[in-house]
Amino acid sequence: MHKAPRGTLDILPEEQAYWRYIKQKIIHACQLYGYERIDTPAFEDTSLFNRSVGEGTDIVEKEMYTFEDKGKNKITLTPEGTASICRAYLEHGFHNLPQPVKLYYITSIFRYERPQAGRYRQHHQFGYEAIGDDDPALDAEVIDMAWQFLKSLNLDHLSLQLNSIGCKKCRPLYLSALKDYYMSNNQNLCPDCKNRLERNTLRLLDCKNPQCQQTANAAPKSSQYLCPQCDDHFKQLQRYLTILDLSFVVNHRLVRGLDYYTKTVFEIQPETEGAQSTLGGGGRYDDLIAELGGKPTPAIGFATGIERIILNLKKQNVSVPPLPKPQVFIAHIGNEARDFSIKIAAILRRNGIAVIVAGGSRSLKAQLRQANNFGSHHVIIIGEQEVKTDTVILRSMTTAQQRTIPINELPALLQ
RNA sequence: GUGAGUGUAGCCCAGUGGUCUAAGGCGCCAGGUUGUGGCCCUGGAGAUCGAGGGUUCAAAUCCCUCCACUCACCCCA
Image (tube, rainbow, N blue to C red; front, top):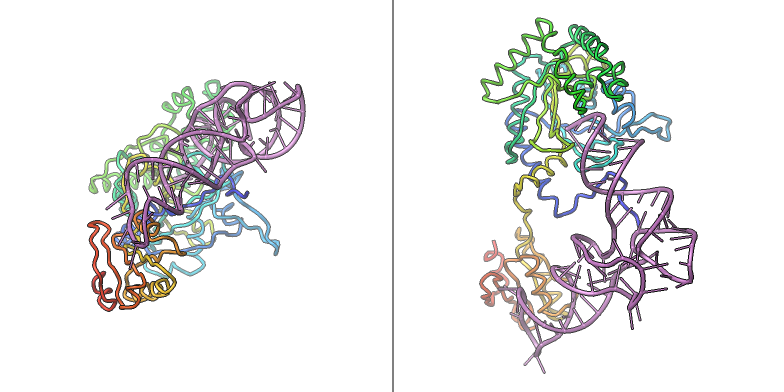
């Protein structure tokens, strides 16, 4: 028997209520903040991600689904959302639109990882990007939207973590100070960190090893090395967040796994134990558009994993509205009644009434049992008698009362 | 990629070498007289015991390999 590939999952009908619930909240939030939907392909040229996400990152180094297609093109299934949006911004000349351009997406994300609860090889992200404005008020708005969106889902016990990692002017200064610090504390580091020291110094800051955490606590903080512009940007952002009444934690050890971030980085985390602590995250990427061949254009965005949202909705026992189902069930006895029931179903559907017609030719008892299991409110019963007189029996499943109705009165009764 | 645990019908699970031709519950199907659901009763279908190999007179049960899931690390959404 075939099984779904490792790390993928079927989203079954019983799960769909969560998806619809989340999608509705997404549409609402995007409308409130002025974001328009964009859909980009499920795959892109590999070079797009090498360029944007960064050659040294885990995503590019070992997690991308990359292959050569029959035309010998190097293709990669999207391992994140932002790069495609930036590509589309450039490709369609969106710099000619009023700035910032605000776009949102819901898309599949593919990463070759070891699956775990809340971590899959294909998952779905909702993300949004505001491109073309470097005002810290926009950073605050983006963060506010992320926060309000998650709150609108009835998720609770969330925490907003905030940091600034500077720009290409001041970040090198910080990085070398950080590296110097870690070099001089080399003997206290775990093997992993010793390994990462050269390659990705920022990552040492969020090592889970207790001793490394102690070392990280005393490490130089990026906020101490910000250039005047970045420093001011960060202060302004915090001021705006205060105006917005959002409480946040400045986390000097917050770094993100993609190279393109500058200045503002943030994450929203649920208060849970265990591995999958990030519900969503984002930040500013002021150099990315230029890196992809556009003129220098500041931008900021956020993304969140839908499967992870659902995980937390379930953990917090948030109930979501059920999907609507047909409330009318048609039962029939005998061949003539069966033909008649098909006609009645068509009449009702053409009047906008959702119905289920019993299949096969099972006993009336079985058909009613089925209607009961479906949770139908009304059952229409058709037998020989009813066919002859152009009537049906309408039975209420809640009161168990029933009466004979001429078919021309039926649609109005059920509307 | 590393470490640990688990794997019996659609779902939850009993069973740790010998009437296991695998038990029970949920769900599904059908009956409990003629054209009427939910409760109850009765019956039925549904399992190559994750896959392959080995040990043994005998394997769901012991061993090996693989696969998958869960958890932790890593990384991230």
